[in-house]
Image (cartoon, rainbow, N blue to C red):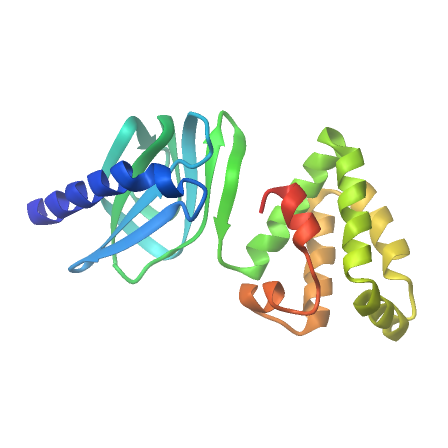
Length: 225
């Protein structure tokens, strides 16, 4: 264990020292040390944060934790598939987490400021993308309705040909059907609608959605994804 911590400490210091050059790129950096996964969660939000939420693809046990620029503590213990760490961490600080089994990987992670998520989320599944769409759109209806409407207008322009064909095959106008749901439904309703549309595309992976026939860039941009 001591060797693992020493390796992690050295790697962590290298990560922090070189971090400013790529602060806006990927904020999760993985390593493997024997039978232990060693990941660095870098605070690229541009602000101090008060915690982080992390979900895994299986149960893990956190065997080591080390902070650079602050201190956080787990709310739910150190074994499970989902964790919330709370405390303080400066911008461009980082958290090193070591867990077993080494084969486990995060499927979702987001920084927190108080109770609010901040920065770009990390996610690996279609289901989590649908969840983020629902939560983000519901929030923007109150925070920036003009921007949200403009983003959807661009979305329909970017995908006019594809959506016209899909609308014809369904026998309904997708824009006319979509916007009332977007502007009135709770987050869960938006999430379900998104999952329905994705299911109609015949894709089951996040890569399939991102590389499929629909251009989501205008919505990704306003939602910060």
